[in-house]
Length: 302
Length: 282
Image (cartoon, rainbow over all chains, first blue to last red; front, side, top):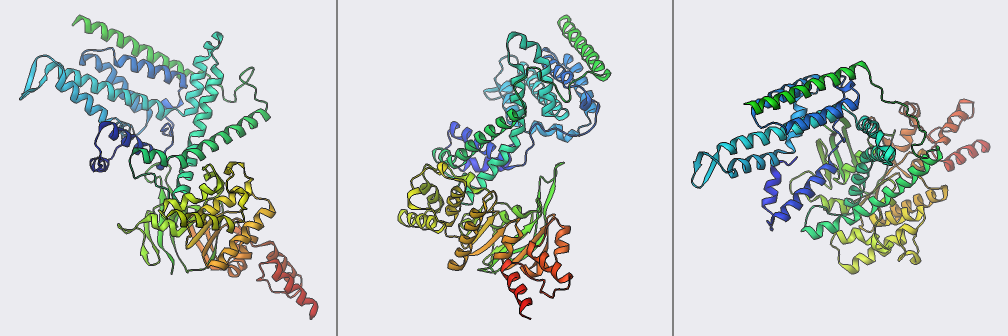
């Protein structure tokens, strides 16, 4: 998400303190997000096996996958994980270049992690450059961190590529349902999540519109030091908040006018029902779980 | 020529599954002092088009010239362009943010670096021009009525003393009196300061009363660029584009079809009155 020319811009700034750079990067990132056309969740519309699975299966699967990433200490263990991940990628029918795109966002993080682990892990040195050395432990550690990060990103993006945000909230609501017996407001939380998701594109559009309207009056959101730029946000944030509150108020009235009174006794238009496909999915996950546990135990043996 | 659009294309979300070709090969020119109407069905690209005029949106291909200068030239200052081409968005009251009406209107001139006294003078004049009384200058913009808020927002753009004023549906959501007030003020501005006006609207009657020339957009293309009367004479084509002619034009056409010899290129009620009265004098 950080194009090369940003570094050129940063290096030309008068102040170079780390805090300053971080704030500028975050700000630039936010501005880039706001200006670009972004659809939240990166859902890739197609009709694959994964797309047709119940979101609960996918949520459980993703969780299982992420946990399995942190279980192993040898490369051998990651064979099962890799096989699983790549067969899921194949099943999703999402083009590989989309999946790889998600990795661009963490390139910096990845680089830092690898470099830190490579050079700063104590142990048996393999290469030496003056007083900096790369150890065998460093190589292993860097390798594992890299694999974990990359697989983590790919695994979770597969989830969002094959599940719409609304399916996700429905799945979470169904899964969390038992919690309402201990007074957790499951329905209200799920409703809040789906309304928030629904309004993100609307508020992004509103932000864009307000920004353009103020720019048409000569407002400048880009130049100046931190304080100046924070102040320049006022003509953007005040109208945005006013607008958000107004919409919230209107929505509440509209919902009440249609007899909404909370989750009590409320039915769903598209309830989540398991089909045979989903049971097979759970079977596959069980097999994966078994393979993972077996792998872990075998690791201990060797 | 004050504004020239030369083969402008605009594509957004290019390369993704949501790619849209919003403007297709649009070319036209506008002279200083004209009163132009921009009409088209919802989604035809009107708002996108006007946002190109002050450089808020950059075209994917093509050139735009303001007073002979290419606005996409590397050393061209777009901020200067925005002080000369004022754009009032739809529902402009949503951009109000300051603690008092006066401070909100002076926001524009302040951004342009105009000195305090001159900026205050401009803000004061702009508020007078839109009919906001002195008693409201210190009020919070959020306490005003919808019509008042809108006029304050317009004053905010007028205070920058633009050479061109673009208004995107300035009468949307106003009651009939509010609509008449705003349009009369715009016309007065046009007559007094010879400012170039571009009015984007869905009301054929409004545009017939004020605009000399019409640009008609249809699915991203500029399909008609003629005088108001010439465009409305082609009302059958307009209907196919989900537009129409002013009601009074239909009346005159119906009269003509039924044997009453009246001119059919009538677009306003006062012209219709003259034409019909002529019938009785024969």
